[in-house]
Structures are given as C-alpha cells and as structure tokens.
Image 1: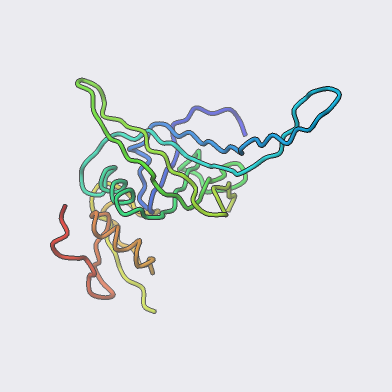
Image 2 (image 1 turned 90 degrees about the horizontal axis):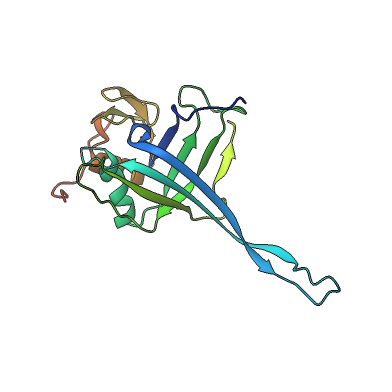
Length: 140
Length: 57
C-alpha cells in the first residue's frame, strides 16, 4: 500500500459514523513487560509479555446536536455501555487486505469534553478494549 | 423475525446509510434503543416504535 495522507478515514462508534467529527485516531496496543530475569553472567534482563492493553484514542470535534458526538459518546460512558468501534483508512473503499479495518468491543472509562475561547472545540476520547477478543484488524 | 424499517435522522450517517435514507434491518435491541434515544434513527415501519417517553436529559 502506498504512503497516504490521512483524509478519508472512517470511524464508527455504536454504528454511528462519526468520521466527520473526528480528526485524529491513535491506536495503542501494548503488553506489560514482565521481568523474569534470573542471575546470569551477562546481567541482561529477561522479559516475557504480560497482560495486553489496547486503546484507541480519537480527537473529536465537540458537537451537541442530535446524533452528533456528545449524543453518541456520553451515554456510552454514563451507562457503562459496551459498544463496537470501527476504524479504517479509506472510507470510500471496501474493507480488504489493502484497507483493513480495526474493530472491537470497547468501553469508555472516562469522558471529558471542554472548550477554549477562540479555539475549535475538540477533545480526546479513549476507547479501551474490554474483552478477550480485543481490537483486531479485519480484511473482510 | 420480521425486519424493521428505519430512517436515518439527524446529520450523521448510521452504518452505511446516509441521513434521510431508509433501511430495513434487525438491529440488536440495545443498540436500537440507544440509537433511537440519541436521535440517530427512527422507526418508520415494520413495528411500533420502542422509543421511551420522558427520557430527555
């Protein structure tokens, strides 16, 4: 796949297409690094991967209309709802090997909109994978 | 189980459907309830609306 400029991304939350209300997506998948080092001649640490945490942080524009950002996101946080999120690079192309889609069940463990005078109203929202399937990339 | 007909309301696409578009689906009941409450969709056919009354925040 060629290099790209992020312009046509698709981001869906709870089946609502919030692509036009999002301007940045950052995926973080990380395993706890468990030190299992024993005595050794080299003194180099030995590690094994431990519990895995997966998050997707999205910068959304604050919008408070019907079905818009706040209306979709706040109830998910308030009611501790599990929902599906989907992100892919090109919303104009179908999901495939060159346009994989990240999917998974997520919860919002925090929700913090805000505003600054004269600035575009944006805030970050972090979706955390909450089941054993985690977030994964799909090509179909 | 019969499918329900929905209309996408408001400015935000729902799944692959654009605002104003109608579609038939069997949505997960909890997903449907959330989408109805936030105004993403409305029921236009297939069965009576399940939208709750007096839940405006």
